[in-house]
Image (cartoon, rainbow, N blue to C red; front, side, top):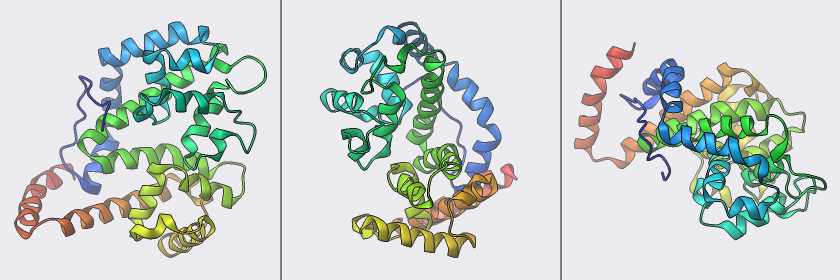
Length: 275
């Protein structure tokens, strides 16, 4: 993935669920090392110093350094060249259900528009107390996930799930609205589709049908069809375990027999060490 070219390199000695458990145990230390990266610190210092002076979407998209932090914070770094599109997103009022940002299937755009508030009446949120802190915290999380994803995409998706799913589960909205948010968040959608071994054509189905299928698969896997259950970290961990297993099965299915044997042999030693 683009954007992970920082001096920080995460330590991921093994893949799969055993590797995920290792990452969880070392997460705080690894995040501290990442936060100390000179590249990250420079970007963060510049953002804190200058964002309060940005009063329009146009001013933000014309400032590549600030825009890079803003987009990375919402998992949208790949949109850095798409300045006209991002300006239109930022200028659309998040409070209006039919605004441009809210009509996009990917919910990350609406979250970006809402966070900055350029499309709303009154001043934007950029000069509000705590605004820079909130965006910088998201920037830290997402850029760490990108660095992890450069080595192991499954680990990046699991980190994103751990960060986002519990928050969606606790939202004061209907179950349907929660599921639609999952379907509109690419990282979450990928985890659920992989964990439940859904076919490639799943995303082409009517959205209501997709929600029904996800509920049915969640009931079969978890004994409960609701998203609200994922307010419990143990439930999230159970889903991650299922996702990691499915990813390993997919990887084995695409390998030749020689590669499978080599992978199994390589996996024996680290698994023993991580117990």
